[in-house]
Image 1 (cartoon, rainbow, N blue to C red):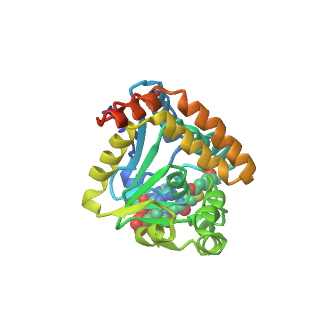
Image 2: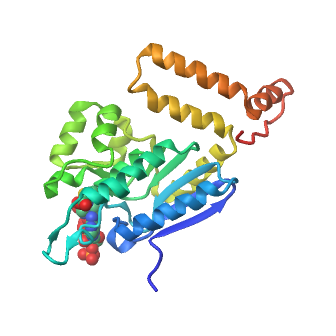
Length: 263
Ligand code: T3D
């Protein structure tokens, strides 16, 4: 039996998902998408889970689509991309963005093609100093997908986005952090301990409010100021209705550590 291409562990309020095809730099096959959906279903059904951490096994994070997996055996040529984008990558990006819990990504090595853009779909991205990001698509005659053409201009501006996409050059993680593409870099040896500690910290926080923060930050790109103020008002009213708001204020006034429940 072959090894699972997705690993899932749940502990301390954190679901940790590891892309696990290290010999192929964790590039995605159709079967791996099926396993990932099942892992996300299991994680989100578990009421103890209040943060998600995504990483890759081995020396790569994810090299995007497995290019061997899309070869049509009948023709020996790449098959239609329509179904994999429509059925796999696009729903995955939308799901990561709409999960009501924080999603941390620990980019442990090269993140290429859809692999780079899946990382950008996460909420807080840490990368090993030796990691890199490559919009590899143009090298094989494709255009960015999995949200790359959406995330890149918003995060680093059109000039840098355009050059990265057209040249398909490797962007070292430290440069990515300086440009604001990701949150920060970490020494390679410290990446997983720091990412796990961050995810555990987030899971102990008022995660209902963190989910609302995610919603408002995502909405801001398409909203006018007036619309965004209305959304802030609505979500702040929702936040004031949570247990964690009462707990946070109470703990502050009583000078004690709050015990948040994520509701
Ligand atoms: O259906 C559709 O096509 C639409 C969906 C598109 C989404 C996409 O993601 S398109 C973009 C696909 N990804 C790429 O084009 C990246 C291809 N990989 C690379 O350019 C390089 O591997 C890297 C720059 C990422 C890393 O280079 P390097 O030198 O560190 O490693 P390597 O030797 O190239 O790769 C190591 C192994 O992984 C190697 O296997 P082998 O020879 O040892 O058996 C290599 O073939 C394999 N590998 C890496 N990336 C892929 C892959 N195998 C299949 N598909 C890959 N994407």
